[in-house]
Length: 566
Ligand code: DON
Image: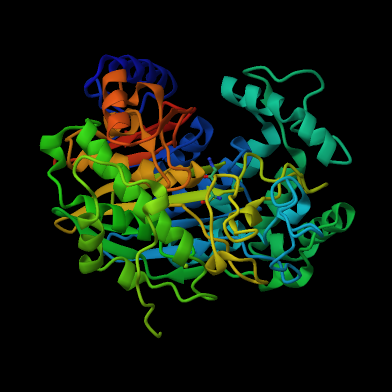
């Protein structure tokens, strides 16, 4: 364990102990623990709400719904009611479900809607305008999740978010800086000043009070789905579409449905994992990465050592090349899931990796498979005393989505349409490229990287894990899993460790400055890799289940994330 990690972890641990007295601190490098329940998410206000639902006797799914709505209030850069996401649920009865509440392209959308008369992509159209907004999925998703699994009444799990919006909460230092940084964009893109713009400048500890959002959440509390997709809230959304030139219609809202899907599942060493199937690429990519890496004994190679990094990066290049070629919404394209994740295919891909030499991305192609007949974010992890667990990733895509707040509704619209491929080969905001499989079609879901994952060992819960971070979601989750399974770290260590990332194109290992020293960088360069230091990669919020019955929360010190257990 390196010194920086210890420093970082202890700062985090002290900070955490100040806000939470329920959990016990075991030893350095270990996150907060509990035996009856654990919530790990991006904001302490939302963690508190989730914890209180668990303490009232709610199950992990009740708490997860409460956290999702709470994040829509206290973490508006990614928490949302007008975005979308994915849930992986494992019940105490050992059944695993996945819920897709991803946004959809409006019925009036079209393949070339972001291209100008010259056939080129118009800069910013798919990210910074109302045309970037997909049909929101979050509220329908939460209603369906609660109807299937909830044990507390719906209004009990929504009410804490109403109160948080009405009474306000003190913003963190990071949030003050973040809101100040989008002030200009908010004023430019909204015809009247939203509550997210302060009269002067935001400071840590200022109260963010959201009366319009409180009313919208009350309608959702009282009318469930209809409180958002019909009636007053729908009217406000449509008025905003008319004012700003958007495409979403009442029909789009009325027809939106979240979908239960079969999770991707597989084994890695002695563990079984469940993750999100298309329209997220996350689960499939994770299965490919773990399947390829299983060839090497990573434990003896060592954490973040040159050979380990080399094998991981070479696998990542191949996996992201497949993603660009084959993945999209399975209701529209035939995604060859079984072929891309078969043991034979993955061992062939592993065989392409040279021991001492990088393969240039230009020479890496999507593998040849034949499809059979028959594709600012935030993550939260919740577990209860009965053995239920929820792994959930939810998003508006960019920070504060397209920065347009529905007037009178008080919530941001997403800019998820940028996750489609605007034009084959043209990179989206995360530098990801796509092809026909992920082109825009009315009613289609855009491809995602979100990778909410649950891992079991001997049929018992072992880990709940996920991350935001656009294209780096998959590799952040991948590294966290290897950190625990192969490198023997605690949950907190695994989450805090520095990360690196490769996504095939550009041909670049991006790395957090402390992830590797100059010796390792020099060695990797000599093997033909290209490297670039980058900012923070991912924000993983995860739970590890220890054999003695403790659940350990690992909250990412890269943000305001917090773990609370009891
Ligand atoms: O679905 C996706 O893959 C992206 N819309 C996620 C965006 C994201 O993670 C932004 N957060 N940092």
